[in-house]
Length: 60
Image (cartoon, rainbow, N blue to C red; front, side, top):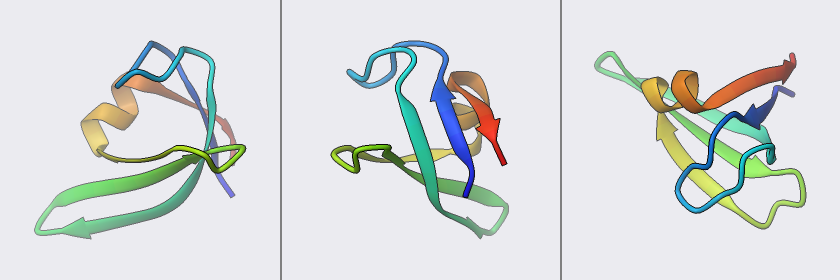
């Protein structure tokens, strides 16, 4: 399972928070990702641009 780390404060979530990539989907060229914090308390749905601008891949 992919693990991402937040590079910047984003949507009220603090920098450095780790997330699991739960799901990714593509519809007519638009990719969406669903991420959950490691404690599973917060769930966010973001697009590909937000993922690349605000998150770093820690583990594949």
